[in-house]
Length: 149
Image (cartoon, rainbow, N blue to C red; front, top):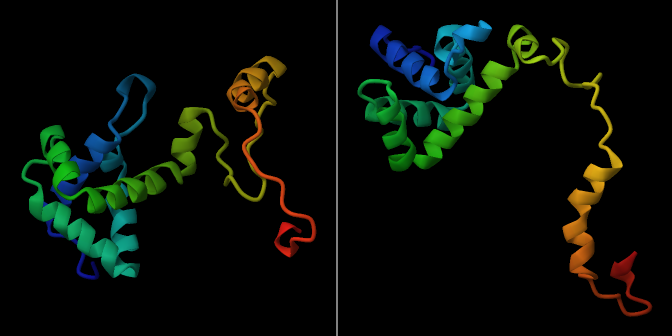
């Protein structure tokens, strides 16, 4: 997407992005199109020809950038849509100014990481109960099996 998008294509992509990640005015959270995530997608497409093809395919199928459009494209071009959705999330949630609106630190997730509270013993019990109830689900390896190490 070295040549970028025409103004009409950009408006269409911004509309699609605002459907994928809509704004929440009550919390001051912008939609993905409004935030300019299309710029991130254009950069990705410039580095990855197959992603460029996916975006072009989506834009060719789009007519209004509304929810009906997005649902139809998701059905008709599911692989291209899945790639667009993944990259849109990356472009949106990688921004420090957006992460802080969701109560997550502005710093990158790695190498510092985010503080995660430990799970309670009750939660761990409920999460592991189905696995423990299932019982043993493996076989012992024969003695001397070199692949067992």
